[in-house]
Picture 1 (cartoon, rainbow, N blue to C red):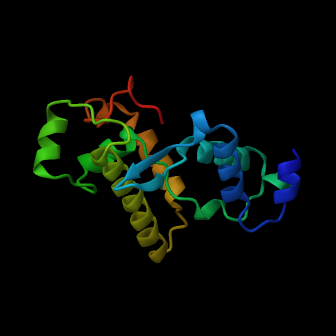
Picture 2 (picture 1 turned 90 degrees about the horizontal axis):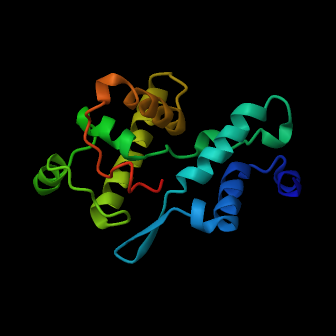
Length: 170
């Protein structure tokens, strides 16, 4: 709990907690891929932990009232990407579309997989920004969680995922 004491009132508390979790448990929470030798950080699991702590405890204990929680990017996994692709929010090249239609698993951390995840994050950011312009208080994280829940419904049972549940580590 000493980290939480240090972060109390810090304007970047959620971001620092996420980074600390990823650094402390790198094999489980440090979701990093490389694209053209540049690191791409997704940290979905660590972010989920921080969001859950905030959601469950912020009204009970101010150490969990992270001021930057609304600034976090959306969580993107194969299910969210499948929903975004189904509604043509995220589009793919012809070759990638053919590979996905053939149920080809993309290699985790490969260029196509990282690009799809990055496109999903960008789509959530843009959609949340547009919603805010129209007066809806929606964050990218809220939107990602909503699309994930939608993707669990029967309507998306056959939506193509770019990575199977067996090979997905995030």
